[in-house]
Image (cartoon, rainbow, N blue to C red):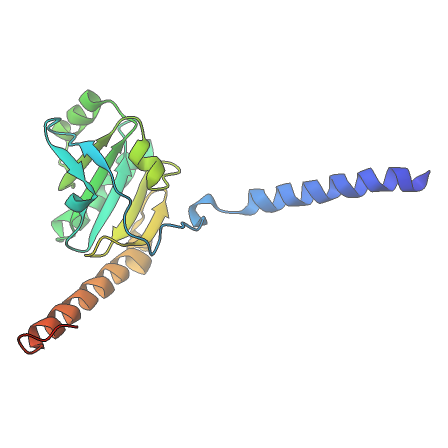
Length: 192
């Protein structure tokens, strides 16, 4: 008789333990299977000009950030001053305007400066799904070849930029410079 009561008690206790463990995890620290992989392909209209189609190739060619934002996202607005600082500092920033209304996004950008070089309009969130977007804002660091090297779920902070993002950007830029110097130093006709 006591065994019949003990089994459900142990099961409930185990489930509660798993629930508490899950609640203690930080969703911003979720590992992304895309880190280390090429940026997922997409084809979307430009936010500013629906006649212009953008692809992942428009985000590639130099070390850059990709920011996922929307006008309905208050934390996206809160992180924008940091993005403006990065853009003024010469860091290219591309973006997905995610599950938003084009008119609202354009009005928002007209009222404030834009840190973005390129903005892909993703009203249905299809590209966002392929990129593994959990929520807005999200920020990715792409290397010059278009490989995702970092992903941040949630807003950027000055400390996060100083501790993680900017050192990674500098490291990736230095790697690219060394690779270009090696290629330039190779004798003509020799390939690697």
